[in-house]
Image (cartoon, rainbow, N blue to C red; front, side, top):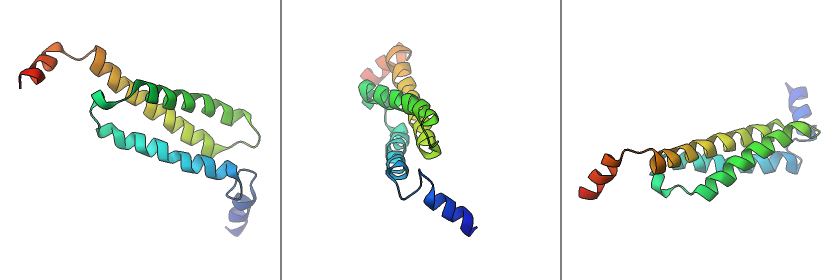
Length: 109
């Protein structure tokens, strides 16, 4: 167990490097995006979610071609892409595919 911990500690993308801490703190963006799943779709921003989704896709790919492989960077960016795409799908469904009866009912009520 100690040898695995030491290997993790001394890894080129381990906790002694920025390559560990940057993606670790980046998880905050994905966690905030997950918390925003409770937000009504009207409050979702297209530019923000496009940026989150594109960042996730681009950096997921990048994290697999750099040396050393950074699985923390890969996983946080897959989460960013997933949450961004999910939020975009919610916004698009509301803006373009919602039933007009729902819109009229909400205006009357």
